[in-house]
Image (cartoon, rainbow, N blue to C red; front, side, top):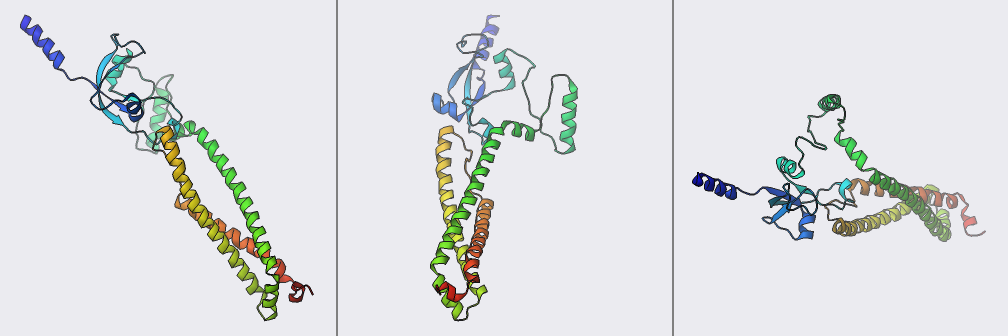
Length: 272
């Protein structure tokens, strides 16, 4: 009997400790490493209660690029479901769970069955959850679109004024070209091409500045929030839209700036 009791105690003491996974933010702030032993408790200051448990850190997880979790100043600990039930003292009880479906009609069928299973259950699609948790970012996105529209309008006015001043300074050159037989269409075309080139150079400089700014923004805010999320991105679609819009605005501004002088008589441009 005594031998069996001793063997039971030795077997219990030799059983491996349960493992958990913690996020990298908690590991950095608490100076924890893989293999360290920690005590988990359901409430603060209850390390000696029956629900407390000594576990081993088995893994350190990297943060996910989830916009809805950036502003949450909290730590995450992942553990087995049985260990979680023992820690909280609640069995067969969950707040939420995720189900992966085949998509399409299968998702609709699963959502309907869960909602009809019992009162208090409600299923959401992952896309709906993303929309609900990203309302702040949608407001920021609309704000950025408004700023972009104002910037485009202001840059268009600036480009038009610049071309008008340049064309007005070259009124004698334009008159000389008209007198030697250069057609009105050729004069307008040269000014329009010049405006497009100015806009193209400006857009190239803007892309470089935007790309450098995005690097600085990501470097700063990734360090602040300790996440891998990209806060500013310069994509090929954005570059293509910016360059195309700049060329179109340059062509339009060049046409408006040159049409007034091109219609005037050559001698009138000389002031006669």
